[in-house]
Length: 494
Image (cartoon, rainbow, N blue to C red; front, side):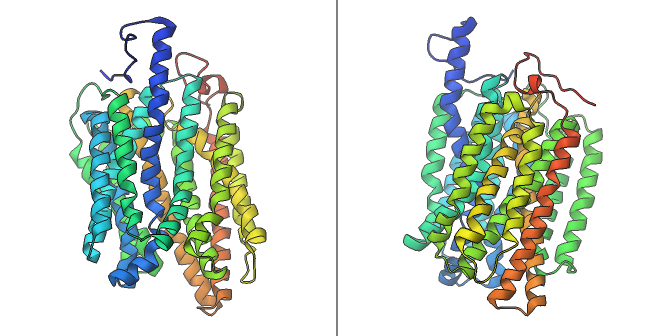
């Protein structure tokens, strides 16, 4: 039987309001450590980006190998997330969290000490494995800690905003460490973060695991890992041309493998991904929105950083500072949305947020070689922060609403997998668009580069807009149920 968070001394076995109050108190104290783990996982997806030029020069890494410093993490993370979610459910979410935190710290230490390119890339892949265990375990523990009620919305708002904050903070911190300390500290910084999260969860959280059968669906594991891995690999290689077998061949293979995965999941007794988790229309909206938002967020931040450093000439740390307004606005917006979520429900902010995201990207289409940060970037960063705050809060909550405790880990994994695969697709698609537009404009000059960035931002706006109709058409949960005003969760369809 899945257990709840430990109650404070003297409250075990007590009923009534006092016991509930104590249980909530422990939940709130554990929340910062769970959020810290999610922050670290997302942070690691972007913190190395600003370090790549200096890292490549110091280690003598070729241009073709350089991409794998980023791709190795995304590839393994995306491929093993569903398995990580099931391991957390079956083996125990706390045990998985502690093991993954320790493993992530060790992998980061190896990366920071690496002397050869293969050591560095191997460390990034090892980070991806432990991230695939850590992310679903953290979100599953949060689901158990806040099973319902108004506190759940606030807790998920804090946790949900971490994705945007972590991605933006990765740029800021990566720039600072690379410029003033060493690129190696982009890895070392994870060690104290992981240790703090580990100690907090070890101290405050009791074990939680799924009941019933704990048999692994190994055919599903293989198909999901190979399918997601092929997609990420194909998208990562698309920067070198969609016509190459390394891009379309792996993308096509990934799609076929995932179709086979769905067919297997419909038949096996203990599926890796119970289709009931993904096919319920409200949760499906959350997963699709997370996929598209990941593409806009991760891909958009990459090209915002390119414009700041390459065109406007910002140093790495200055570029990181320049992205701070988006992070600050995102945090403020997430808090306001969480506070008003019982009144607004999930559909309204989920549909309005993408409009702000698209407006931000459309503003960025006006970038020029002679542009300025205040005119060309700052308004867009503010709009982007508003949009992301409005999307992430309800979607993170909705993705796990009504999920049984037995499926909490795999549902958590699916949210993270959606964002990760979406981000990989966004980077690959936008990189290809930028390269083609730059070449068509004449290559190499700042004007040509800016023209490529402008087209990328236009495409990103189009991707963001797609989230709005998904929210309007698929979300059917009523406000009273979503806010936790009813004791028994039920979802209205139709």
